[in-house]
Length: 319
Image (cartoon, one colour):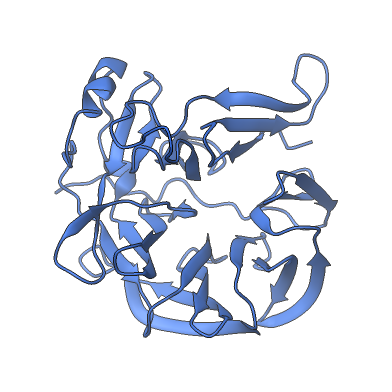
């Protein structure tokens, strides 16, 4: 029913597991199976018995694939405080170890990215919170899909002893941090033209906003071109959840315990939930899949189909 695909659901807690959920018959597993363990803490260099061992955001590096629903899994390892790409060899190639501080010149390890996506051109966009500066922001890594993989699992294990050292010289940059300090950043999703992103952010005063940020197509310019638009605003709201976009450009936005459907800047429908959504996924089978903070996976029959991206726009890095 998922069109030959499956859902991956990371567990952020001490268990450090990523679960797989699929529907089918015959030899195909039905329901939940364990996909990866441990997912967020392997070296125990940065995570102790009392810390986070799980993983947060997941994304797919779909370069050289026939569809954007396939590719190498990219995992935000909360325990290791880094973002890695899972290679076919079994190696974990570190993509990001450090982020720029929002209030000083220092670098910092990543905190707990909840959301990340790839653009159609191979840039990786991440939401993260700077605990020292008490501010949320969107960051990006330019041409992340072009980062060369570590050659083997042995090299991957050596990487655990690295201290802020990568096999590439790309620097994480700030994409958007708001005119005022952002309390939190929620979901991120590409728009239907692949030239902008939607971002759900929480401003001071319990205000959640759905923003449309326009992206540059020039590799020599910052990824965000400075143009933004507030598409919708929710007052007295303190939870900015996930976002997804369907093939027609409709936006599914989770705020508090509701999912709102936004079409042409208008709210056209509301889906009430028993708990807060932690992920929204449109399946090829005509269902909207919703995971919640009460460890439930819900699905709702819907007419929408997921937004597909071209996989042939990623340019080889010549630098």
